[in-house]
Image 1 (tube, rainbow, N blue to C red):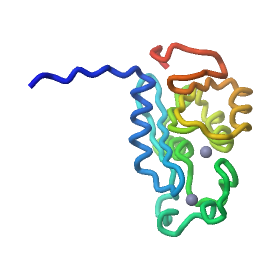
Image 2 (image 1 turned 90 degrees about the vertical axis):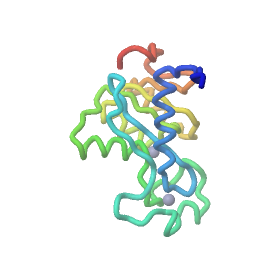
Image 3 (image 1 turned 45 degrees about the vertical axis):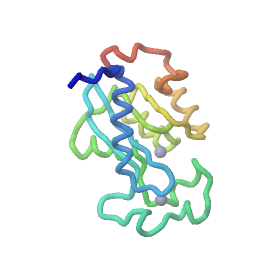
Image 4 (image 1 turned 30 degrees about the vertical axis):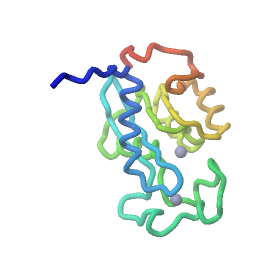
Length: 167
Ligand SMILES: [Zn+2]
Ligand SMILES: [Zn+2]
C-alpha cells in the first residue's frame, strides 16, 4: 500500500483543526464552538460551549435564548451554557496552568464577555475561523492590543506575526 501524501498543515491550521474536534462535544442547540489555548506549540487547555458540569444541558431542558428567538450575539445570560473560551480559561484555573502569553484558537470569533476574560487571562493572540457579530469584542480586543487573526484571512490588532514563530 502506498502511503497517502497529504499536505502537512501549518501550526495555525493544525491547532484550529483540534479546536474543531473539541467543538464536536458541544451541547449548545445553536452553535457548536470549540476553543483551545496553546503556548509554545503545546495545547494547554480545551473548552467547548455547554452547561456547567452536573447541570442539565440545553439539549435536555431547552434554552431560553432559543425559546425567545434571541438574535446571535445577544443576551448570553439567558443561556445556562458557558462559552468555549470560558471553559478553556476555567480549565486552566482548575488545573493550575498558566495560559498567560498563550494563543487562543477558537472556531468562532469571541463575544464581548469572553473577550474581557481573554484579555485578563493574558492571552496575546487569537486565531478564529467563523465570524460572530460582536462590535464591542472587536473594539476591546483591539484596545488591549490582542492580536486577532482570522485563519486564512485578515488580521487586526497588534500586527501580523509569523504563525510558525514560537509563541
Ligand atoms: Zn442554551
Ligand atoms: Zn463568549
